[in-house]
Image (cartoon, rainbow, N blue to C red; front, side, top):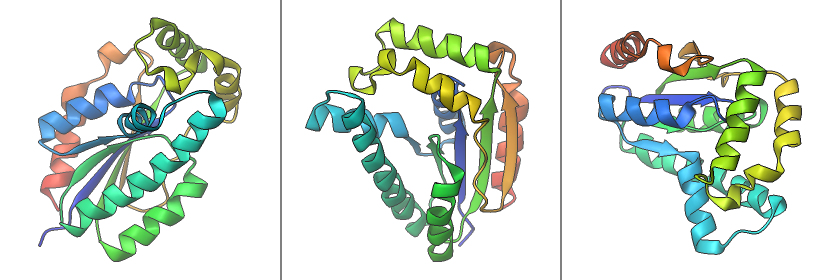
Length: 188
């Protein structure tokens, strides 16, 4: 059996992760697991209230991501995963999964200037398009502090890392990115 690919799209909130992940998954014909989809389904099922509850369900979301990843990899399926994470916390879990079910990681790390991210985050929060359980309108200062800590670092799990600047999301060379990922997957 060929080695499955785990394509991880990560980066700061409002960097374009979900948009890029959905497009790549469609074009690569891969299942796509989006963290906010899981979290919002938990909000719809269990309810939502404040930031503390949002963070609690966020923690549960990570556990479900690990479970879904294991299910796909056990079946030998390549898939795409979109989420942001603290690599120090998440790396050990993915190393455990990799020991059980070998896979080839392809990490796409989206990056943009802090002011651009803050503007997008604020616009998104005020748009009313996000689930209210995310409480985005109340966490602008928290997000600014997170940006000050630096960019998201890829997981230390081997494989390929592709960094994409999304300052001008419309001008990202999607075709080149797609071909690079498709080539990596084809070589497995």
